[in-house]
Image (cartoon, rainbow, N blue to C red; front, side, top):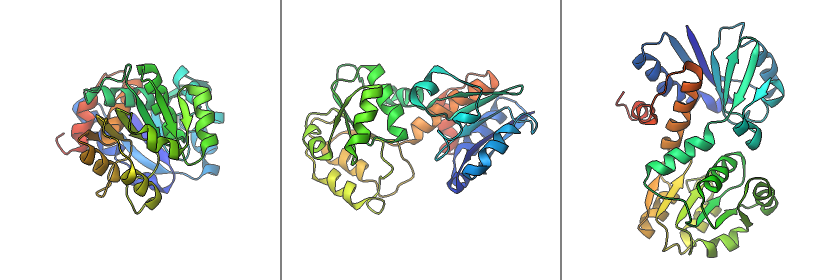
Length: 272
């Protein structure tokens, strides 16, 4: 019996991960289940310490716990250690092994759009935890120049020193956008109600060379990044494809079954 879950704060109850993973379990003929479990920060230690006893095979970790789980793990893979964050935990006996599938998930999602990052300019907006995976993936894919802009320049600077890229201010980013072929939103806001300031910034820039806009968020009906892409004649994709690919990679770690990200995406779109 395979028992899986995703943990986060109260927002996790709206996660799409159970839909994807439960569909994959059925399709693979595996007996098991995947659930969403909200936890407060002070509950993490007790919950993680009881995973084996409660019969868990593995869990996903989402905001705001991706870094908070680190002290409770016995081992980190190279990706998680580099990023300083975990989104996938595998239960091996009494040992907990942490990994991160966000970076390869983003890389696969970008490649699926048909865009070639190697040697092409990219602008990443945001410098938080999500941006770390995006910047690392783009650096590995050879995006150059690779600019990282955030409302807190010091945060962008620290990220770039650690993972690559050039930190710039939002004012500088408005100019850099004119030379960028790829723009990735790794900030939390995608609709004007979430951030009127960022929406106004996106509406003000001239980004005539843009070929691809990617937003790692999803589910926004009023998405100003999509409006930006449309206005500049660029392709647009939201975070559903990245979500599907990182989920498929987690599923393989838990079950040993390689499943294409397209199958997870199909579950989100109601085709599974």
